[in-house]
Length: 286
Image 1 (cartoon, helix red, strand yellow):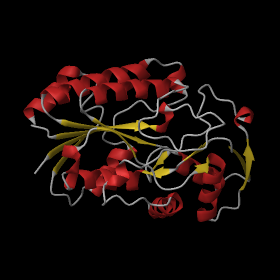
Image 2 (image 1 turned 120 degrees about the horizontal axis):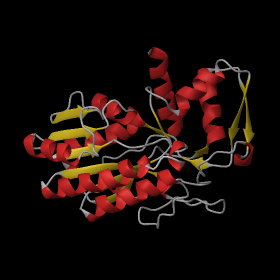
Image 3 (image 1 turned 45 degrees about the vertical axis):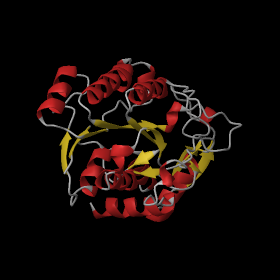
């Protein structure tokens, strides 16, 4: 039986992992930021040493893309703390699985082919740069990086829950239609991660993998599908990014190739619309 530590407890992915691991054979411990700050090198080392942790799944991250343009804490958390965590995991022979993002890529408007795992990163905002630099430390220390994109869940603040709230209260919405990626349910990502752990495959992995749900969409198409599933009467219209200016630039195209993770026979990708319908059903039940 493996001892699994999941950081970032209380976040949407850690909650999904807790659900997916409910009947797992291994021993899972979930710690929130208040319980374990990954920036606290001594606390992390004490945890790894005293609890004999076999695998760390690092879900702790600074994820406010807009605020990161002004708040340099994004580098302290996403780069420096991750570098320290990966160094300690290497020292204590603990497998580290670190969650990263499609925003490590720049995705200009001319691109239309999914990014491969070994494509050069070229982030265009502080959030993406901090995550790319964190990835480098993980890989250098023999850890595992799983990049995902456009993550949502039945819990917390995310695009799906925001659009549901707006589409059921506002008559009209404008959503950008010139950024393309893959909406991904934390539920499907969590099941994949727990499967890798329970089958023991995680102990033989290293380097970078991509995992998202299957297919692609713009934020506008994503929002329209949310409204359709919810049978909302709101009228959603497409607009360009220039119509909705933000502090942080976003990739125009950030679809990820899943070729490497799909070499595992047990990995079956879920169509993003199917995964979305499952999540919305869960939201309605709460």
